[in-house]
Image (tube, rainbow, N blue to C red):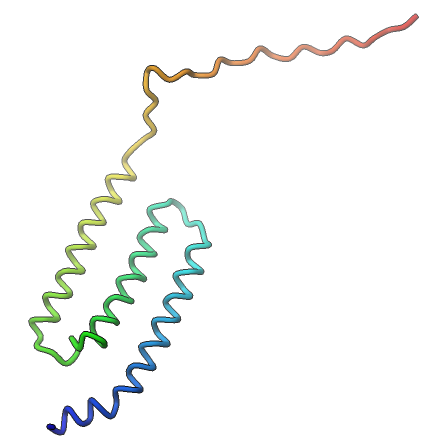
Length: 124
């Protein structure tokens, strides 16, 4: 076992504990953000997916050992996240440009006639 592997093995419990705390904190942030209604539904989705991407990156770096692996593997993982973000960005742009379409066969409610005042009963 090399010196670098010994140092990594000795620091592993601290790294795993810090990762656990970070993942728990990010989960709490996700739950809190789910209860807040931002300007539109797509903003909520972007925030939730951003937090999920950060959590997935932490898991990949620590538990898949990408942090200590060859740099090309980290580049492949990061490029995957970037392409996912690009795909989701185009989906959000597409959804935000849509409007509600009412089919021509839909029955539109007729406007109600204005209410007339009730005549008072006069007893003589």
